Image (cartoon, rainbow over all chains, first blue to last red; front, top):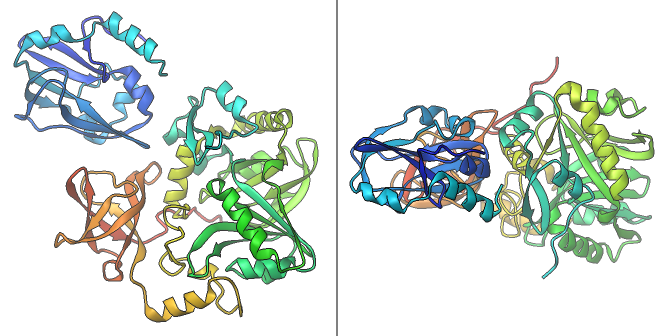
Length: 129
Length: 373
């Protein structure tokens, strides 16, 4: 699996791509592979505030429910409506099936996240498939 | 603490890259990379899917007292079985609650085979051995003798016919035969399953080499029908859509036959069986709770154990099983609720991560396979 070099990553398997004042957030290919077929996504509404490291929603596969952790703090400016009816898009291409767009409250928070290379190493060490 | 058990096909599952999970002390495949739960589920509904169900248990009763012993411990009427016929039933405790559900096969004049759940193998065998004690029959645990492969779906008969000389068109649903399969002699072929589709379960010798060879041959023969190996994930979503009970969920040692809605498999006209007296009393006393089918109306997936509330906010019951249903493409569940909430169309709320999400009672079975005319 390759991870886009212009994303940053969390140990909970979310990705964040900084774009100007804001950022786009999703979950990684490794996450969707571990989860299996995704059947339900619960996301915050536009205008909601999210805080780095705190739960901002959930993603469900047939067998399990998984919390989504915010990679950075900010306010939600857009939600990917496609995922309400076609959550399987995340399985097909996790790195383009974005979940939310946010303003970045504290851009410096991104410095504490993993680079693509570090995330790849983290996943390999975790031993998961 | 007993070590985790594996079936003879464990290495084959690993070879195929299956995601493995612990199920009642067994390491079993939950899904395969060739499919995934949804694709495996749909393969069974539309074509054919192959399952390793060797973790199930097998108890044989043989002798002059075998029928009487079965009649004593099983709630259905085994005296109606012809040789070669099977029936769904359950073994009950004296209060009319469930030891396990079971498929009773009549192998011969005085020869019966009970196929039971994986998680209750030891408990069931001890129960059968003890309760059958007074009867003139031998009770054998044959669970480790067989690898059990389920071939399920509308194309199951086409697949299996390639591998056997038995005329499968002559084997009706819930009947069985013995014939050569993949060159192995005298293999039990039963037209039974846990998916709501037509299908077969074959019982072959449990050594790894034979088991793996048959597994590979079945998948190979199924290639033209789109056969895929299927794990416990799809097994669960299939049986839920088909509204089939799972021990520990819809049935257990604290739930009785009437509550579980399994009346039609319980022959009260039999003069005696374990649990009969308590069921008689319970029937007269009336139901305190009953099993219903739910369909989510608002967004959310009701899962096992979630609480159910009335519209007035009062807690009224709980979900026994729930999931996204891959063929029906809905979120469905079964739940125990008081009888006054059981009418089709009744609105309830399921507590999902702190929120009361609207659901309604729907008719069951959720899914019934199309009958060929």
